[in-house]
Image (cartoon, rainbow, N blue to C red):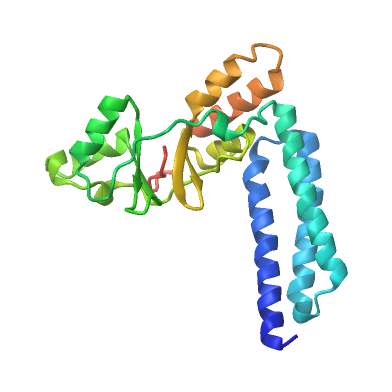
Length: 245
C-alpha cells in the first residue's frame, strides 16, 4: 500500500471514529446512570483507538480495525437497548407527518399561507431537487415582519430561513429523535433520506405516542419530560437562531 493511500485510509478511519463518538454524545443527554457508565467505557475505548490510529498512521493493525468494527456494532446494540428502556424504539417513520415545503424564492406571504392552510408552525425550505436547505418557523416570520420594515410579500424564504438544520432519518427511533430535540433545543425535526426531505416529527407527535402509554411505561414518560425541560431551557443570548425551533 502506498503512503498516500495509507494516509487516506487512516484519515477515513479517524473520521469514522469521530463520527461514532459524536453520534453517541448526542444520545447521552437522557441516559440513566447505568447507561452513562456504559457510555463512559465506550467513549474511553473510542478515544484510545483514535489515539492509536493517529499515532501509528499507516501502520494500523488489523486487530485495531476489527475492534473498531466490534465497538461500532456494540454502539448500535447499546442505543437499541436504551430505546427499549425508554419504550421509544418505534421508528420515526411510524409517526412522522408529511410537511408542505416551500422554495427559497417563495415570498414569506406564501410561507404564511402554508402555515395557515396546513395549520403548522414550521415550513421546510427545499431546493429544486428536493434537498432540505433550511427551515422557517412562525417565530422567524413574526421577527422578520417586525424587524425588516417591509411586507411579507417583499421578503423571500431564503432571506429569512435558518440554515443550521438539525434532522433525523425515518429509520431512527423516537428515542433518538427525542434526544436530538433535547440536545439541540428544538421542538420539530425534519426527517431526511440522503439529504432529501421525507417528513417531519415534532414534540407533539411524540407526546401523543407517550400519552397512549399511561402509567405502564413510566421510563418513557420521564425521558420525555426531561427532554421537554431541556428543550424549554433558556438559551444563551447570542442572537443565533436554531432551525426547526
